[in-house]
Amino acid sequence: MKLLQFIETSIFQKKIDTLLSHDEYLSFQEYLRQNPEAGATISATGGCRKIRWAIQGKGKSGGIRVIYYYINTKGEIYLLLAYPKNERENLSDEQKAQLRKVISALGGT
Image (cartoon, rainbow, N blue to C red; front, side, top):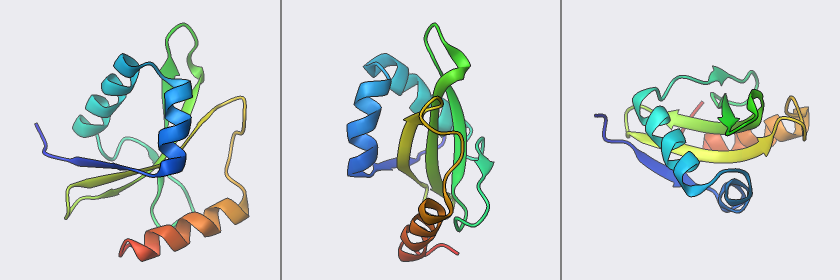
């Protein structure tokens, strides 16, 4: 098992509690621990990834999206945003620019 540290933003923490049960969240973390590069890279964000995650009874298409940043050399996964698919499909240019600033501050591209 890979030793990875999850680092959650306050925005992520508040939102994930309303989207997933504790057990669902633990399952998500375990999946990401085993597959840290599973999410599709989001252009113009400095390397952020978006992963689809199913909510029990809704499947992936009705599930949530999690935006995260993986730093392989440090063994860190930054959990940045979480939202239901029906709330938004893609990030706006402004949101991408904000994520790019965060990633730059973390030492990313």
